[in-house]
Length: 275
Image (cartoon, rainbow, N blue to C red; front, top):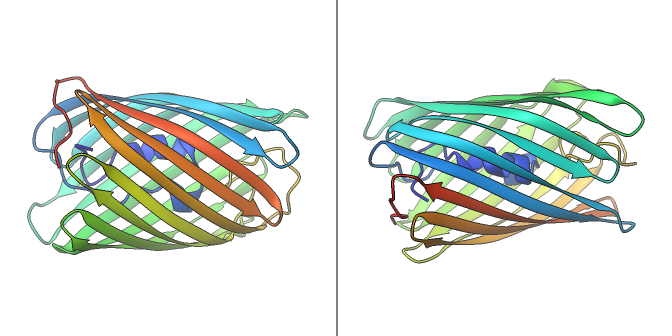
């Protein structure tokens, strides 16, 4: 995708997949000029026991410079008897150019929902730094504040991305709860391929995570269940639109969830994807 270091696809993936390990986009090649985009997502989920859910999001983003971006939109998610709606605001700001260089980014998801038995507030605030130390190494430092229903806490994360070849990026990250009752510890690894005609990603995550972090609101799971996750996706561009299909499988101590997500980025200025 023609996207800056804070890929605005990160916001879409966050609302579509929500798991901390699978939601984060690694730093990609910067955009070359000012550009306006519309980003859409739709997802469906299937749970153990026959129930399921789905959701959608729509966002607008504008790139002012290679790494200066602002985005805004809304998202809706439903799973079993729970549903919630959020407003989304995100952006990034470049810190210098060339190598080494960095970018600050932030995103806010604020809203409310209903869990069947009662209503709840939903707030997830993320801020972080991407630092490109060398052409082949980028370091990510991130802090995420989660206040969803009765789950509260901070989830700092350290990530490393290695450009092992021009089209190939390998990323690894570790997130651990700092305060609150999340009880989350997640390690993940991910591989991204960006070719001229096709993009692809695959990865895995393992650890423990609170139901709110996993977006399993209202489901009967332990406070911090053990998580094993596999995810993969492919993407292709058609004219002004970049399409991406993602599959995510989670095994949460025997409680299984499979999610299929379709993402679309429309370049309003008529530019198609660049390699």
